[in-house]
Length: 356
Image (tube, rainbow, N blue to C red; front, side):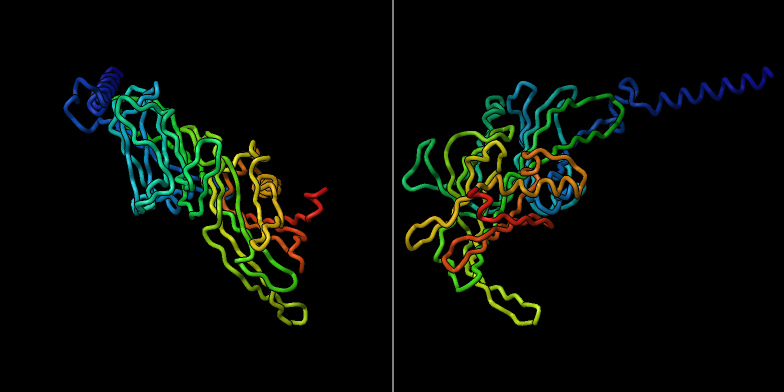
């Protein structure tokens, strides 16, 4: 019995020694790399109506700005192109541990063109504060405008994303690789407006499309700032002919017009400020002026039921970035009803629904 007890103590002692030799202890391994603690940032864009990460397929550039706990700029990390399409893409951090940092991401700033769609200030180490890192649409105006007036944008905006994370970087000397996730919100939207006439023909040159909103500048926390109105104009406008067959197989042609517009982030609180307007070019007559936000939110209930997620109006608008709105016109170019489509869902809104 004593012999067995001594054997047990010998084995236990050996395990303790082995454990001490393999642990990351500064006393024994201060010059070894085996116990190095690493930190990395990963990006996820699942703020969409599929609740799936689309970062590898959509995002083509990353600007990650690092600030200390008080909000003073420390360092910038960038990435672009093919590496971002790899699901394992990470930004390895070389920051001192045992400190808290603020990570601000503006993704999609670099679209490979000299005339970029958005501008973010170039920060200065030790001087720039996080509150200064707003992102502004590069709109145009003739003549130059002052705050509170109107600017114009007729560009197909490259996708823009915002993300923020406040994180402490631990250092437990245990050789662990730590990863932190920056979740992104898409700040750009594509709106396709289709005019379909039930009789006769119409031409793209007969109409003027615009969307007005005060959403050209986004703060570091992604809130909208400023009161300058942006008038978004089509970056594509063309005539269309649609063939539709009846029950007898006879095909009738319906003439229509398609207009594609890009806009920045849509806010639920601005429902009474954002309007889609269509006018006739010959006499300036307004065919309709519809509240974009109210129309967009008509589909929210469907997605709550289909995917089992309760949504706030703002979350729905942040998740949705593609809108198709079809307005059917009579022979006098008066709209009869509209069809709003978002992914698999469509809703019909008749003219009297708005006028009543």
